[in-house]
Length: 187
Image: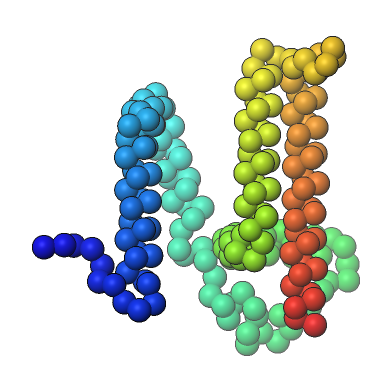
C-alpha cells in the first residue's frame, strides 16, 4: 500500500511528494554532515546561567502581552492618534514612549515587509546570500587579525567596517527598489 499523495489533474500530489522528498533529502544531509552533533556540542558549551538569562530575556521581550492590538496600534477610537508634537522635547519623549510601547508591533511589521520583499523580489534572496557569503569570507580570511589583498595588509576592524558600510548600502538599494516598485504598482 502506497503512502504517497494521490495524483490529481492539477499536479498538486506530485508537487507535494517532491517537496517531501526535498525535505527528507535535506534532513538526511543534515544528519550525515555531523551538524546536529556540532550544534549539541555548541549548546553544551554555553553555561546554564547564560541559557537561563537568554530564556528569561527572550520570554520578556517577545511576550504576547507586549503585542498591541490593531485598534491600539492605529489609534482607532483615539481623539488625535497621529498628532505630532511641536516642541522637540515633547516629540522626543513621545517617540521614546512609542518605541518602547509598540516595539513588538514594529518588529512584526518589519518581518512581514521583509518576507513580502523576498516574495516580490527573488533577487533579494540572491543578494542576501551574497552578502552572507561576503561576511563569511571576510571573517574567515581575517581570523589572524589582518587580511592581505594584493600587497596591502588590511586590519580586520577596518575591513569589517568596510563590509558593514557595503552591507548598509546594499540594504538601502534593496529597500529603495522595493519602495519604488510598491509606489509604481499602487499609483
